[in-house]
Structure formats: structure tokens, C-alpha cells
Length: 414
Image 1 (cartoon, rainbow, N blue to C red):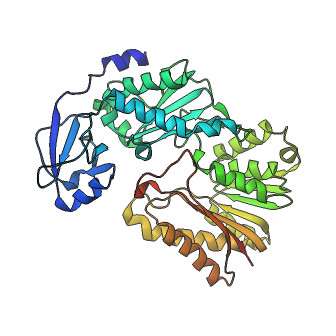
Image 2: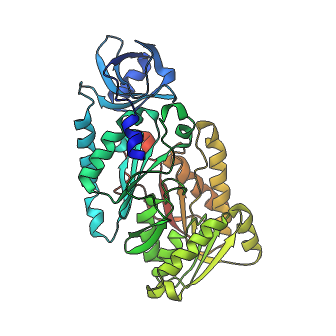
């Protein structure tokens, strides 16, 4: 059914749109930025359709960049070519996909078959994300501009990796643009049999399940893989608190690393049930079978003060909240939330314990985030001694400023 729907999608338009922009944006595009916003466009040669190739010119009518037009998004053009003209074609898509796949090849030697294969603009394909969960691949689109090219993307995916199945996920914004989807829907299986439940995969030999139809992102938070591994090496003999635990990834690694007890906090009962299921699926690891696993359902900002009042203290506290700032207007509030959260985490952290704090908000700069965590600790009279700062893993490369969203600090508090 889905393949028939793909055949019904009109082929990409052969015409080219000429786009002129504000002069102050020229340098940004010349430097390779992958997004052109509607507000920066001063003139366009016609009424573009989703997927039309838009060619961007500078004030002297010289070529600047080219990409795919999306009339339904504030990011009006997803740019694929910069500085020198190049045909936007099936060959270009295939070459970029092959390069992205080759970069991830080392992960297959680490007992890992769950990772990101295409990280959007950072891999030269803005608006496209492709995640692997064992034999199941999830293709997520963030722009209607890619709908006319969906069959080409699927063809290259099948040619390169021969997946058992491919599931389509659509961003929330794109799900609302039904007139541009030609019958496609979020969670639709594009190839193979529909998934009959969560899809199992391995990460550093740890077994996880991903809800590829309804789970957050494409079903799992793949970007914290390396930080989870670091927690495993710090956990032996410790009492661990994992706030915003989701499906227990950090907790499971900590248990495998020899933690005495791990405590999950999450406001989602479903997430906690997934954490329990992951622990059961990994009981063959001695550490997982021995570790006590406690789960607390509730709002972290309410649960942490309760734990502090109860006199509960932990050797290692993990603070990995969802994005606090999805828009620029939310940045100040996000900084306040990170500071408050750090204070609450430190209140239940033993002396000489380890604090691990993450931010996945790209609009909050690394300097602001790290400075906020240090300030919270100093104000409590517990200045942090940093162990390290971490960023993106191999499968989440950074190709432009806004692509650098993940920031994590590992530090000891006196």
C-alpha cells in the first residue's frame, strides 16, 4: 500500500526558482548554513511548490546556494549546495547517503546495531533523519520538500543496507500539512511488514527496545550512547539516581557497571515500565541481576526535594532533562530551570559525589549551560571539579552552529 502511495506522488518539478535575499544573510549562506528562512527572502521568481529547486543569488546576481523549497515552513529553503553550482539530483542524494553510512561503519564493530545513519543537515541532507534499530530503519522527515524525493531516498536505502523494514515518521509540523503528504502518514511502513511491537536492538551489547511507531524522536534517545557508556565505568559500588530516566538507559548501563542500586525518576508510567522491561531483558549481565532497581513516578522538580527531605543521598546523580528551550524566547527560562535543577540534584548528592548534567537545547549555548551549572554549585558552597565535558557522538556529527545541541558535564562536588 505504501509503495503504491509513493508512486502516486508527483515527480519533482523541473523548473528552478530564482530567489534573492537580504544582503546581511549572504555571508551566512556563503559559509555553508543549511537553512534559508522566509524572513530573509526579498524576491522570488514564482510561486514555488514543495520540493522545487530554489537557486539563491546574491545582490550582484551571483550564485550563492541551492536547495529544496518548502512553502509550508518558516525554513523556506533547505540548502544542499553552496558557493559553486551543482545539480541537485538522485546522484547527489545517493553520494551523501553513502558517505554518511561510511562514517558510522565503526559502530558495527562495537556490539551496536542501533544508531543514527543520517543526521539531517549535519550530513548534508537537511530535514532528513534516518535511524537504525537492528533490521528496522526509521526515516523521519521534517520538511514537505522531501516528499517528492521520498521514493529516491528509499531506493538508495534499500540498495545500501537492504533493510528488513522501513518506517516513516513525520515531524509534528509536517503531520499537519496533509495536502502535501499524498496519503502518507506518521508511522506508516514504507517497506516490509509493519512492526508488531517495539523493535529490539543492541547498544554496546546492551539490549533495548524502540517504539518506532509512537516513541519520542524515532523511538529512542540514541544520542546519549557514549555518555551512557561513561556512566557504566563510573558506577561500580555506587548508589545512582537517574532523573528524567525515560526508558532507563543510563540506569541499565550503571547496573551493568556494578552499581549497588539505581533509582529512576520519570513522570511517565509507560517510560518506567519500559525501564523495567529493559532490566528484565538484560538480567544475563551479573551487574544487572544484582543491582536493586527502584522506580519513582513523578515530576523531577517535585520528587528531588522530597528525596532531600527524606535524607536520601546518592553517589552519582544524572540530570538529563528534555529540551527546556525550543525557541529563542525560552532561553532565559531554560537557564533558570537548569540552575534550579542543578541545585536540586546537588541537594541529594553525597560529598565527593559525581554530578552529570546534560542539555539538549541548541539555543542554550555551551558557555551559558556550563556556567549555569557551575554557578549553582558555587552558590551552594560546593564548587565543582570537572571530570570532563562531552558533546556529540560519531553518529550525531556537527555540521553547523545550530547542529551542536548536546552538552554534558561530568563533575565532582565536595
